[in-house]
Image (cartoon, rainbow, N blue to C red; front, side):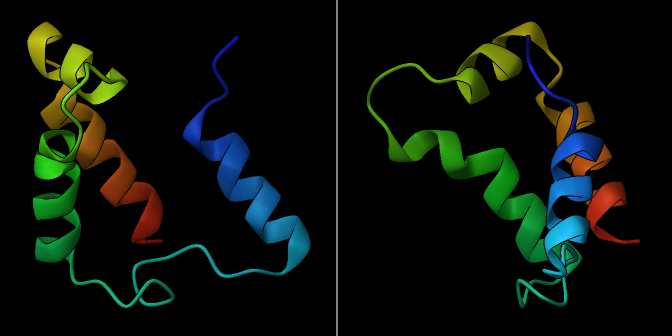
Length: 70
C-alpha cells in the first residue's frame, strides 16, 4: 500500500524535523520546477513518468506544494 503524503509529514512532525519549503530552502517556484522536471534525471521509467503519462503529475505536485506550504 502506498502511504499518503500526510503520513510522511506526520513522521517528520513526530521526529521534530521541519517539513516545509523554508526548511528545505525552496521557493514555491523552485519546488514546482523540481517536482515537474525531476523525472528527466533518470533514463528509466519512474513513478513520476507514470504520473505524467496519466495526466496527474501537475495535480500531485500542487498537492505536495500545499502540504509543504503549511
